[in-house]
Image (cartoon, rainbow, N blue to C red):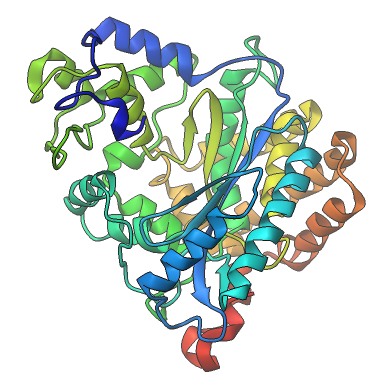
Length: 431
């Protein structure tokens, strides 16, 4: 909900404050909208680098010029810019995997052409290898976010300004139990998430040096305020669990006409009960849910947020194709669920992304033998399912090439990246 939806000093004109039971009912009714899985979407975040000198910071003026030029381009996807100047393309919901891939590829080609003419390049890396966090956007939302996240350390600014991802969006699933049931898909997302982190880890550097993590981006998420970034417990009643999680998570900000308040430790439930500077309204609840950052987020659909941005012209399509195949093909979903459930159970019940399995995935990638074995099965299963989903030869070939180059060899994209300081101008890191 944008700030302009608020009335004088915050509350929408004519709206009634939220009650606690009403808020819980609203979250339950929105978080998992069920029906046969038939739509797919993707959100692609990109770092923007100078094409010839990617290690050099791009000036604010050049970033603004690039933003204006891209906004003037006709795109099917929604276009936004992140606090550090990262570009994000959010596809429209598509009726099939191929429809989503085709539309996104066309948009991406247009955007790449536009920024290339300005001497810039889109870099598919989970974390910027060189730059310190530097916020470009000065808006009340990001002022408040920065102030709130600073309370738990520097990871928040790094996440806001130097990270990029591939976020896969899928239908919540069917109401009935089974491989495509929403409760099973919700659990599968948490079980499979660590495998996706490991297979697509692509951020071993920060500020010009190796961090010791294959996915430094995932390490940043694990260092954020746990109330905001941890996954809620999975179980037989995910709607109830998520509704409770939403109301019991601290509010990031209370919006208003001036600088937004950034309360410390005020949960949304406390706010409803009179603990805030004013009563909360429906728009505040909607906004509050956009400030929760678990690796799997229900927003009517399922948003998988744990995958690093990928290098190369077609790197982004591999996690989109593989993840969609493993969730939306019933045979593949059942096979993978049976494979990942024992692996996750051995790691204990701690929530992602601080679960030991997720830590191993972010730190070691597919050099962890257990994760490598499950990833190999997941890719083999996806390659069997993709023809059933109508994927063309290019998509299947690209997924197979990724499997052969990385998964079959117990490697991930981070293993191919040379140290930034060993490259003239760092050109080998922008592909």
